[in-house]
Amino acid sequence: MFSLRRCNRVGFIALVVVAVLLITALSAPPGRGAPRPPPPPPPLVQPPPPPPPHHPPSLDTNTKANTNSNLSWLQSWFSQPVRRKCADIAVPADYWALEEAMSHPFVDIPQTGPISLGETVCVRVVVPAPKARVSVLYTPFPGKPWDSVQLDLVGNITGVSVPVRLRAVEDYRNSLRDSAHVYEADVPLRDADAFVPQGVLEYRDAKWNPEDGLPPVAYVPEALQISDALVVQVVDSEQNSRLSLAQHLSLPLCTEANPDGRWLNATEIPFDISTLMPPDHHGRIWVPYTCRMQRYSYQDFAKCLVKKYPILHMYGDSNTRRMLKKVTTLGEWCSTKESHTTHPCLCEDYGDPFDRFRVSREEVVIDMDPTSGGRSPTGNFSKAMAPPSKSRIYFRRWGGLTARNAMPWSRSFDAGVQHFFGTPQVAIISLTNWDAAFSTRAYFAAQLDRLVALVEKSYGPETEIILRTGQHYCCRYDNSRTHRQYSRLRNQSFDSYIAEVFRERLGDRRRISVWDVATLMETQPLEIRSEQPFCPSNHARAEIIDIENQLLFNRLCNPADGAEQRVTTNSILTEDESNE
Image (cartoon, rainbow, N blue to C red; front, side):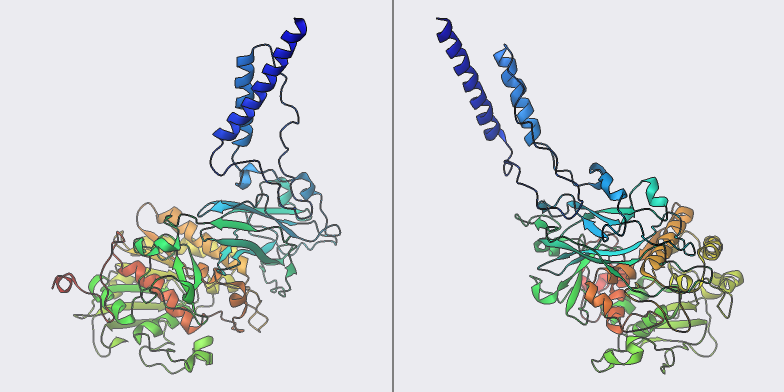
């Protein structure tokens, strides 16, 4: 009797265990099952989380309580979310002990399982401690890294290149010059593809930041060790996400000049591309993720200026001059295939004849209309008012806020720019290109404070301020006699600092927006960024200027709510015309 009762109890316990396992399997979320073994990690990467214990907790005498506790334990284990944010994944202690003699710089992606459109993946880069005595000449800007790492996640099929904006992990060892350094970023992936890391270590020991007369350091990048197992699969099984390329035509129009986007091969876009941005010289089209760009002709833009912006002020360097050559000629400057390979269209146009406005003058006035384009007026005229059926552009050419300006950069403001040149609806201010090349950060910060104060004094809240970034800089250094202090990370640091200061000082009282021509080029595939011919002034080639301009045209001319409007080939319809 005792044995039979004991056998019944054992059989009952076995039945309970089987039931628990069966219930767990049936109640698991769709697509969830036993965890797959992780891919083989690169050297010294974080080990996967420990598996569940080999033996479940022992059964107690209360069968019902025991069944519930085991079910809860098993369900909680299998329903744990995959940790993909860097903040949720500890940095292995081994990383901080690495030295250059032990390991090359390497990339780590702690979790590489499939993700859906728009989800993020944690990417880390480890730069071992230097083996040789480090230099103390070069120092980074406050809050910036010792090492400059250029890293992208690149789609194997689409060729989409997503910049990885690394930041130093919050650890005191990252503040030490001679320590190992660990950087990380949560990178959103918004295209269906298999993404792999691609990049280089550009500079160690803050040599990306020549200041106080130090010369630029030769660009000799180091390879990053990247395991073949570091592949992130992004799936779009339903194709109903707003990020899906299949849904692009249903997106609202872009109302900013700095949306996130990517470059796609024109032949692989599954809809009519005639209304998108024009392609670059490699047949790739820049397509934003969360809004839609219209393709404006230069006549479209001129008509938009006449209707919405009778007065426009622009402050900028030779990159703004090249942009205005396109605008004033209604796109004809450097527009033929034969001209695309000439030096003025690829790089330097300063000595090239041009009769629309005097490119050597530091202040020019240009009157625009959709038929004849733009020209500087002659004879006696009022500088503060646009002629009928025209828009007036005031262009102040400067070399940033540097001491190299023939006429001090502040003189236009000191003289009363609105009094002489009218009250604009928009003022576009371009900085960084000269400032990163020739100024120290301390000097520039003091001049930027002056500029912000003068802008606030000179323009009322009715004038929107648009900040144009500097040109993207990549994959070389300036070894010309001018020795511009350019580097990719240095130029980016100036851009972010300018936007931060303007928004902090003026953002609560007026609209501040960014015309981001730098990120536009940063999202190009690395091989295209690297092909830029040697151009000390870092000018964009003419085909890219057309695309940069489209960012501005969409920002200024699209409806503020992003609603659809009908655009013709040669003009933007007025409200009366659209109702005919």
